[in-house]
Length: 381
Image (tube, rainbow, N blue to C red; front, top):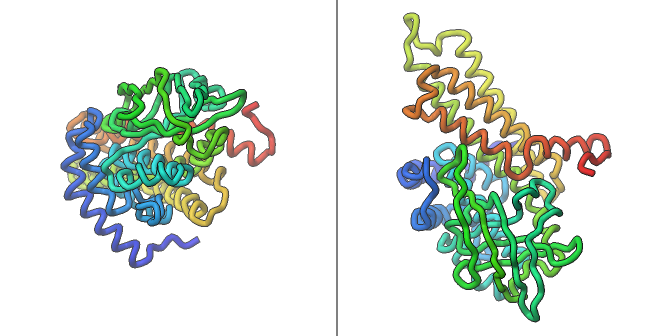
């Protein structure tokens, strides 16, 4: 496999890197410890949309940029070095837009995609529920048919973007072992979202969402009755790849900060970068990052080729998010006491990395997916 960038990709990535530093970093700095406001979220989404971040997965005929997944992953990785919160915001919005493009009626696509792909509207997806965890078929949110409408009632948890989102794609139970996906418009149909305080990634809203007898027309079905679980599961491999891209960006930022500190900090008469054990830690960090990149790029390339990559995505996600924890922990170790303070970004990198071992399948859930592939035995049942 050859992951050498083509000249066009390299130029796009260079231009994107400059934009991130110039326009996104100043905006994101105010939202490292608090969730993005709706106005700020819309502003940053509109800055990124022309580059295909937040709109890249939607083909040009749907109003998007139509990027391949590997190029998109590289853009997200670069963004996550500066702000994994903004990267998460864009990744979730982009996934919702893609679901609407792939499953919405012509009328739904015509109504929503132009604004979703330009960053004038923000989307999110609601699947997880309290007490459900990774056993998605245990969801209790109900959508009951009422003539040409559905009435949706239930509670969703861990829904990213919900407090700043205009629309949410929600999976609900429509029958015995039957699940369907609906588009719910905040302004037209109404849903309530509340931020959840958390360990890291505090600029990226993570929310509880309540649907209290929300009435939506049957035209807002995405993929038809009974297609919700299939469509939700199709997105998991892609999501695991892009969670991994966020982890890569965080790990690379931590490594660069550690290198800078080690070259500047003088101890025992020379920069600590000249001490063998410090160099060993930096080498281990770089090795973890390089191994992670190969796993993630392989999975993204398989997505581009249309091949199933459930196992490869799980390998990439489980390894890369755990590696990011190791890298960010070593960055703190290199910096010593200063690494524990909020004066330096190392402790934030560590908290942000720790967050990513959980969403879209914990490390252990992904290990079970890998184990099932290796043995042919399903440990879930």
